[in-house]
Amino acid sequence: MIRYHMINGELAPAAEASVHVTDLGLLRGYAIFDYLLTREGQPMFLDDYLSRLLRSAELLRLDLPFDRQELRRQVLQLVQANEMREGGIRFLVTGGPSPDGYTPAATPTVLILAHPMPRFDPQTYEQGTRLLLYEYRRDIPEVKTTNYIIGIYQLPRLQAAGASEVLYHDGRHIFETTRSNFFVVKKDGTIVTAEQGVLKGITRKNVLRLAQEEFPVELRPPAIDELHDAAEAFVTSTIKRVAPVVQVDDIVIGSGRPGPVAAHLREKLIAFEQQYIARAAPSS
Amino acid sequence: MIRYHMINGELAPAAEASVHVTDLGLLRGYAIFDYLLTREGQPMFLDDYLSRLLRSAELLRLDLPFDRQELRRQVLQLVQANEMREGGIRFLVTGGPSPDGYTPAATPTVLILAHPMPRFDPQTYEQGTRLLLYEYRRDIPEVKTTNYIIGIYQLPRLQAAGASEVLYHDGRHIFETTRSNFFVVKKDGTIVTAEQGVLKGITRKNVLRLAQEEFPVELRPPAIDELHDAAEAFVTSTIKRVAPVVQVDDIVIGSGRPGPVAAHLREKLIAFEQQYIARAAPSS
Image (cartoon, rainbow over all chains, first blue to last red; front, side, top):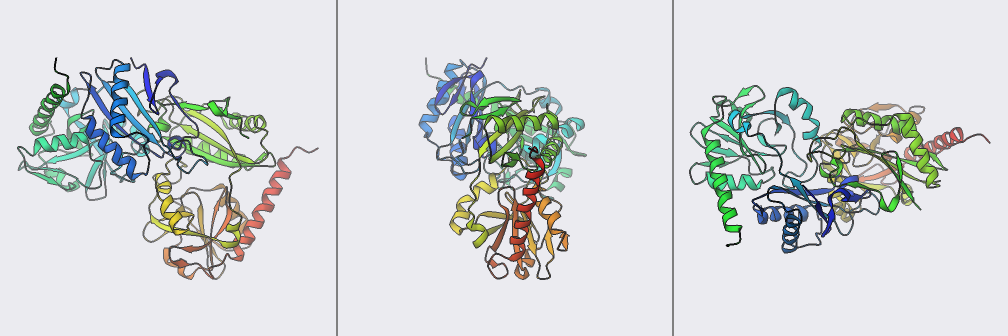
């Protein structure tokens, strides 16, 4: 049960938490966000998410009134106020209440929202997921902006096809999906994923680190053509962790069944998370 | 003085007018809007703006709970409540309070906001304005979405260059600026402006109608190369009406001074507006 959100550093009852209609995040979509999970009461990899948030804010010239230490304090206060063991935490930083409906305010609006733990169907790990190709690049891909019009616009088409997300490409190479990073596993075991022109996922970073202990890794956007000859494919995201991809448009990936590399990396990631929780928990 | 906005069909005091933090317009930029002016108490070309709003909503599958007649009634109520003679009216329709922070709600949020009359420097008509080229196409150009990240992101660069807007192109052809339609006047008097892949401005429509009475018109995106040989260029928008463009990047347009065609069309547009006001005003 979510009882509070944090608005500009102050707890606000969830039902009444709102932003003024002149806010540039609402009027012009001028906003960045970030999203992490709390497991066993621990905001997972909070410092990594804060680093990305601060970088997004800097790139969009949103002059945050709170530093890393204060944002961390606000997250912990929000988790405590909601007695949240498992759930989602969303940062949202907007251009603020604009004087003219276009120019950013001197001070951004800073929201930290608490959400129930998102549902993700565990059958995806056993059955795999389908993606649909879509020629598109996000406007400023390295910044986690709130612009999801293309992804949301495609929802009915995805539903009709039994697919979970659209996979963005530039006609030759694959970059990312709407909300995940995308990986190809070649038949020789090499793992390939884009390094430039994508949002650098925190789960992507953790999975790459774990993968590099055992597999060769190539940091470059996979070619669409490589899908035909791939052993496996998978996506990573905060919510999905490592989810196997079994089909892209009409291209069946590998055997058409979830592959062992994705399953192995997911297990390693869960173990890595457990280590994080154990380290973060106050010793009793 | 703005005292009220309209939220989901109800007047709300301006200072308290807000949307909940779960609104998809805020969280994911899933929103459309439209903007018109009120002159002498008349919402100018309201039916044209309503048509475009309804079309944008349909294209983004935002199932408006109000029909054209009811939206018109709400606008008139808002104008009356604010005793607004001259000002701006903004429609904003969002994906509503999302159950999961991603999926649109069954019923959109519908805001109608009242704004003071925007300032536009009349010296622009005498001195002309500069634009900067930028290779970019809006995501769904025919829909007036709230995604203005690129335009706002470029504000400091524009300011440094003494330019007013970025002019979007695809490497060869020019489509539109962030907030205006773009026109080239060739040396033989032909007027050229894009018809596809741009937001169809209401001012663009009115200006084209008036232009076609006197000038040949070609509805196609002007080539960047044509700027070198153009007699004039201008932009049209609700706020700017017809504003002469004297320079694009380093390309001086024509004589480098505002041209007669833009000035003439602006005069015709003002006369056309006066006719609209005279027709719309209740006979006394």
